[in-house]
Length: 68
Image (cartoon, rainbow, N blue to C red):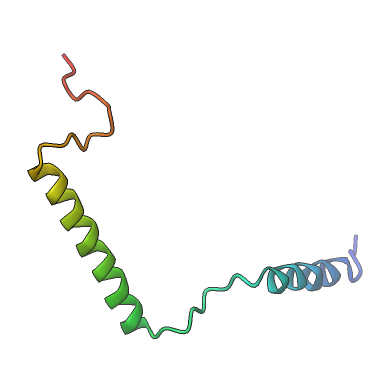
């Protein structure tokens, strides 16, 4: 019931596909820089939502929350 080198070949193929896509976790940022970037994005999102609520805009996405 041995699979020979099929598993190893498949791993090589998968690795080649993933490197060809060029999408990787490494974006050149340190964890601290990533945290700062994410925090800034969240602050901007919260400010946008607060501005929308202050202008009287309905931020519920068109869904009614008046369920009885």
